[in-house]
Length: 72
Image (cartoon, rainbow, N blue to C red; front, side):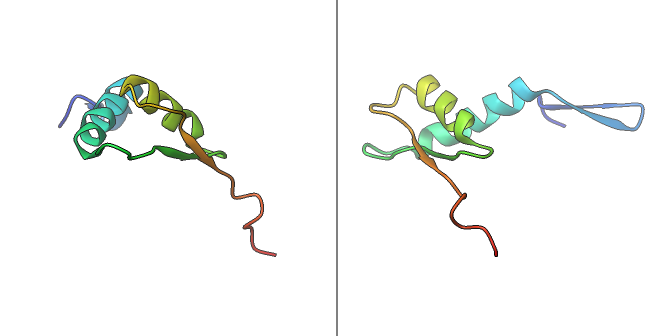
């Protein structure tokens, strides 16, 4: 069991900040110079923005929208 989850009476309680911390620590060593962070507007844009700020990346994070790529 890690810092992000705690078993309570058969249920799983997740600590969002601890999960984010693990993500940040896992992503940090993968970022080479010139690597850009990109989030999906409908669900991960805010996460890319936060990682970008916390990891002190230059420039601005990118954003991808799936609005034009939906099945008809």
